[in-house]
Length: 459
Ligand code: UD1
Ligand code: MG
Image (cartoon, rainbow, N blue to C red; front, side, top):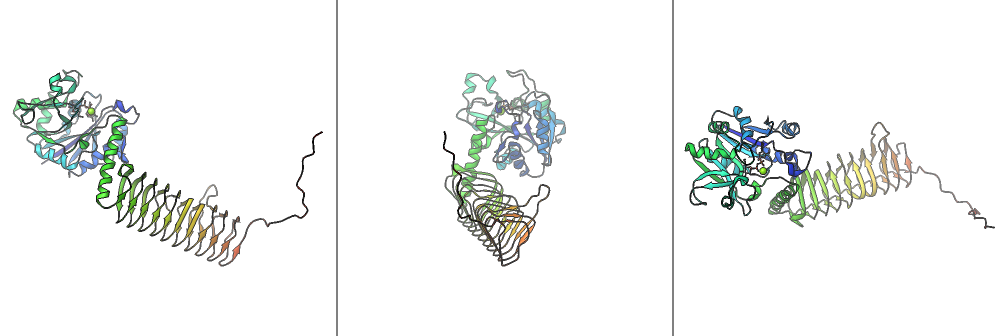
């Protein structure tokens, strides 16, 4: 049966007090709307529409390539008016599932159950009972407020004090028989407190026509919570992070504190992984068996192999760390840093677009950019590759077993031959032969009998 999905995203989001359209604010690293689109993609092949209005251009460019098509609503005269804009494009029969761009954590199973409850014949509403229902549309039922037939939805602003006591609310998500939906939204009126075309008024129309109205329920409130303010966004972020942390811990990952853990992307983990407090993972990160991540590391798009230890306050982006390597504290691995097994990168060492072979070490205060570093190389404190001449980047090749002393400047392009040593403080601008000591600095000189100047005494 044809399933059309409509995601409403034209609203202003006034309470965000932001220039960014509300649905483009980020939750766990991707936009609210991207969360909803990822969920709709799980519902299988269908057509998906996004109602845009406020910030339409930004929202439309954000959904380009997602498979969803934008439908502009100008001006925004209410949720019923929003659906009326897309109605001509919906299929002639089947089910239309209506979701909200600012309710990001709706689960695919719940959305599917809602569409199934409609099955092209019934009007299905997703409802939940809330201890504080302020602001929501209340579900009106005949007789028994628990089990009676659904008769309609009354908006909070239009509700009587007695109706405001009702705990069951409309979550803003429904599934409707498409042909009837088209008819109903065309007949909506805006004679209410807000002067808007309320989509929720179609419930009474369905009841009047004898179309069955059913309610399905969300399994927890997190999946139906909307984002209207920075506070609500942060609350949802913590709920989602908690959910992700619990899933990782169930898989055996030892998080020092699930409340101080942030994953903004995907994290795949081996066995006996330990993550200390305050770490942020972004993009796609892979941690092998026995990896330990110290406190306050930021790790993005990285692969960290078995047994590697990342010490506190390290920043790793677009890099790969070999098995049993030791990184940090305060290390920075930038894109293209590829460390083999048992490499040591110590404090205040920056590595960019460089490969380090097994057992290479750069333990303190150093820069390696555009370098190829051989096995067992020891790279001294304060040494740098001068890889950029102002126009081009050049490579530095440091062959196996080279020792580079402290505070050396290696002016690329050059090759340090295998097993050679570069004396501390050298500025090396030419390749060096294997096996020899190269020193490129002023010779030390001591002057006997030299007298330090003294100030003439005043007066
Ligand atoms: C709506 C429901 C209310 C429900 C609540 C759940 C109606 C009339 N009321 O109220 O019963 O309890 O959601 O959160 O539907 N939108 C448009 N175009 C518009 C107006 C809104 O696209 O002209 C979009 C908004 O961007 C938002 C969604 O529709 O994604 C809901 O709009 P909102 O103004 O938040 O409706 P509520 O007053 O919260
Ligand atoms: Mg709302």
